[in-house]
Length: 300
Image 1 (cartoon, rainbow, N blue to C red):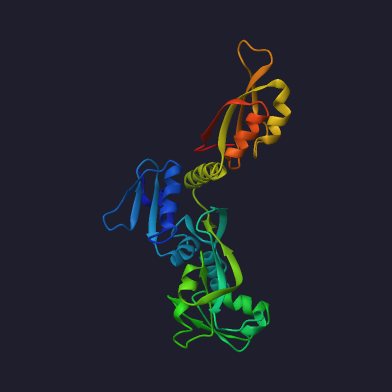
Image 2 (tube, rainbow, N blue to C red; image 1 turned 180 degrees about the horizontal axis):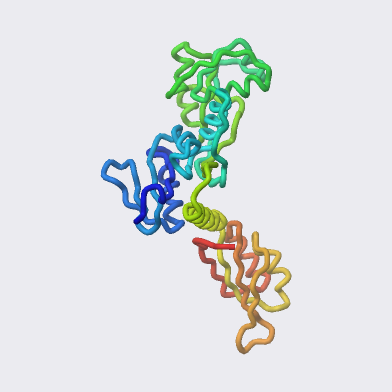
């Protein structure tokens, strides 16, 4: 009989900008999920995999402590937790497996529009509000800046208005929130995106095999994010030019057309975006019957 210890546990953000993308990614890996009534847990129907829906800043700790086997979380949260553990003499017992290419943002310094700023030396003897204390302190130390770090758990952008800080250090995506609060971005400390992390604790052979299977599927989904499958007909004499026009294609398949000695069918997986201009250039080179299809998954 299957026990909870035999099921792979994945920590995912309960609510926020990564939640929908994370669950969609796992479903594209073939996982069918049923959500619990309290909406804190998702049960894998077709695979022994469960999702724990938690606060994003709890995810690295849950993976490091081997409560969960995998976690999907922002790199900013991962690095902040890593530095926090180092500060108390502990190692982060997780490793980054994949960057997932969603949830892009950056941890940046910002200030009110009226603040004069002439580079990071302007931070000396100032107060900087942030919820990323360890990342900010690392940045200040590496640049020999003497400044006071003021912890703010939310709405960091209002700290200067409250007289609590001169600058802030916070996540920036579009910059609209800063602009709405009369602030401007100054310097970037960290470029971030969603990543998947795995515990360093040894797993049973069966669980490790399942984790490897999930990660292989995940890699297959990630490989084809922008990929398209192109099919076309072309004269043999145009093959060299057509190959050069196929974006991100390594080696297309060339198939003789029945009843023709000088025309072939070309099939190719293109790992880059295929634009209308690409198709128009292929047609100008002699291609016809062009067909572009999305690629949902692929195993190397």
